[in-house]
Length: 179
Image (cartoon, one colour):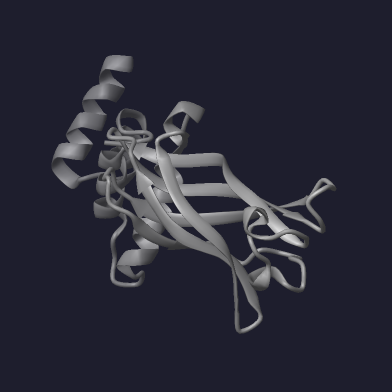
C-alpha cells in the first residue's frame, strides 16, 4: 500500500505538478534553509501577492532559532532613536556567521535612571536579510513599546556622569537560515 501511495505521489508530481506534494517535500527536505525559502517563493508566487509578501511569508515559515554561539558572531553598534513620535533602535550589524543568513534578531536595551540603580529593560525586534559578510548593514527595529519619554535623547552611561542613561544592548534571540 505504501509503495502505491509513493508511486502515485511521484506520478502526480511528474504529471501535474501537485503543488501540495511539492510543498510537503520542500518542507521536509529543506526546513531551515535558504533553499527551502527559494523553493517556497517559486511555489507560492502568484499575481495577487507582491514578491516581498511572498518572500517574507516563506522566510517566516522556514527560519529557525540559531544558537548562542552563532549569535556571538553577529556584532555591531546601535543606539535608541526617536523620530516623529516613534521610538526604535537603529544601527549597523555584521553577520560573521559564514553558514547562516540572519533573518531576525531581538535585542534587549537597558535604561537606568542613574548609574547606581538597576535599569529597566526594553526589547527591540529587527527583521532583515543579513548575509554572511564582514561589512556592516544598517538596521532599524520595529517600534519599541512604552519607552521612556526621553528615549532618543538619553546618552550612553559611559559618556555621562549622571542619569538617566542607557547601559548597552545585547542579543537575546537570533533567527536565520542555513546556506
